[in-house]
Image (cartoon, rainbow, N blue to C red; front, top):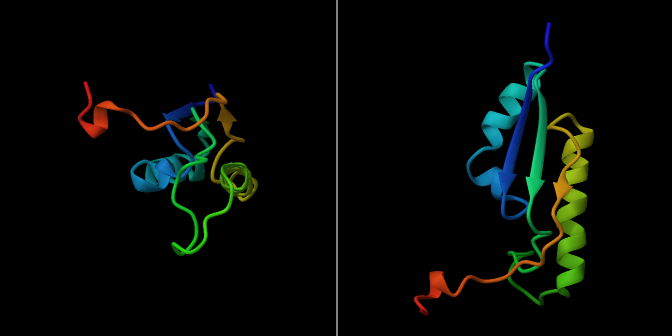
Length: 96
């Protein structure tokens, strides 16, 4: 039987928990090889309880470690990161 594979491509680490995490977990549990590709490390994402914010490098390193930890417990294959820094889109802010 051919091995099935599923790849999810997202902008930021933790985006899978907002929409596709259940799908990835379901198929991983059924034996489908799952992979997660993120375009960034999530350096500018939310972090902690809203108190003092650590550096972007600390946040990015933490997000990457979270993805690797999830992979170790069977959530999916090790994540692949494209390596671009997180940026804010000017389109989303209404600038033209």
